[in-house]
Image 1 (cartoon, one colour):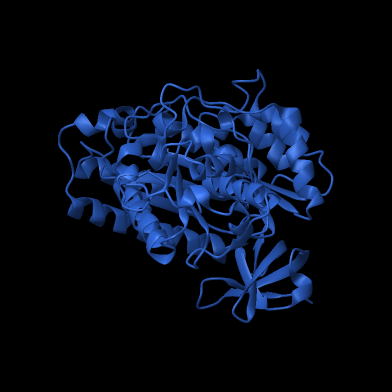
Image 2: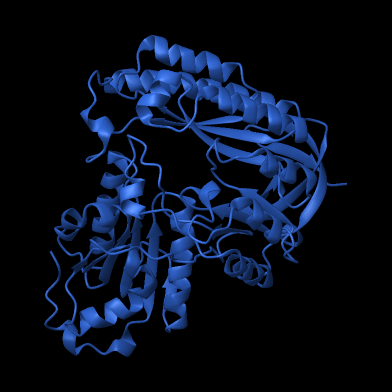
Length: 442
């Protein structure tokens, strides 16, 4: 329910000067929030930390699981409690999927859809003047591409190169929330990379919903994109975020192995190591394809970091199916597992499947895979002890400074302001109690 705007109509607009943001979910959301924040700053707003009393609060939501929905509602209510007189705005996947549910939260002012993200300031002004309802979903609208990148938070920038998805996996609502796959063209994407370089960033992480699908809306492709990005002066490192195994082509792997800028770091959403389950999930490959992709990566980049996404407890996944997944993953030379427990989402085909797994079963399977991940991660780190690597140092953490090698090994050393946003060759010594590598800078 929205606030009574009778008194807001006569507000002095120039008084509204502070804004806070909170982002839930993926790196794509973070890139979008950062871009929205810059638009507020251009309109005279001062950005402050979320949790403080402000004039405007924007929450960028996620809806990947039931827990994500719950966190979104809790965050919105926290913003309302903290700043009861603020204009509270919700955007993102949760508002796109369940606008009515969000609009019913007592104290929410604006519930905006995907096409309103780029114009939040204008929507706030319209709302204050009494010219807008609090709920404005994008129903029946063709979704536009909202170019975005993050800035100001770290020494890495997350550059959105693609949005939407055409895959319609049986468990996922992203295609509903984000719409069809789309992007701006290579030339405009490169312009954004140049802009990021001018801000002093040395590393860009390419992000999107299904980035390997880049180019479908502009008759281009992802391989051509990374070739052009490689030419941007000032950017020394690129990381490719999550990319589907069927879209991670030989030419992409070979190019990353040959160039210095594209780092040996891959994150691949497998989701299951059992072919029967993959079929029920409506994934577009069998597990054998992942084995082929990993072998190809190891041929060209032996020290590459390879992370894998998994969903456990999918409806119909038996103990034998799970054991098949576990044994398959154990046999692979991978570095990390990102494990999710299956969460039933409304309006998805998997919600209608029988033989659902209990929360306890999902918990136990998740625990097993987390233990396997810790083992794989420790083995990956241990293989690099005593080796040299180039580290981009990022930020202070206590009296330490944190950085990452080309292949995403986390290091720490005593804080030195001169190290921030610099790439330094170091020797990896041993891991400490935090699981990070101690280093020799000499």
